[in-house]
Image (cartoon, rainbow, N blue to C red; front, side, top):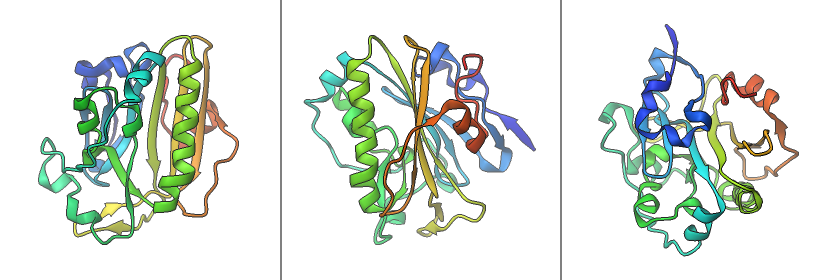
Length: 227
């Protein structure tokens, strides 16, 4: 059975979505989708992949100026709001050879609470180490540079893309993504674009995709009624 994540799922944190409208996601029931609200981002989590389906943020210059002084906690933790049968555990990543790659990055977090929350395993995916620390970090920094120049709020949605038979790590079989994407939408200019990166250590950032191409590749309508 295929359904969609409804707008009501994120009532408590609708501020992280443009016009308060979450993406329209064709999610199969067996993906076990669950919405999770944090103080600085929202996650649609899959209990099947034990990773996010996407993570949404609302960023602006003032927030990022506050985030510059943030101290990383580096204390990852399993999200206790998720049933044990649907979540990644710390031991899944231990010895796996993969980084715990943030989707809402620690560098975006403006308060101690949001910084601590960003280390939830419900906000990370298995990511190749060089990919995470170099190519993907370059994309995160480019996004922050744009937000610092923007005239108001910028909405960012980040997520993994899996192949039809994804590799897994750990005893809970956490899915390893084939690709990662980061959508940037600036309501002030009505511009939207997406970074797309293969999850490999030798991957390098390419030209951004237009919004329509990201929708075609993922099947997700990220900005319903807006693009």
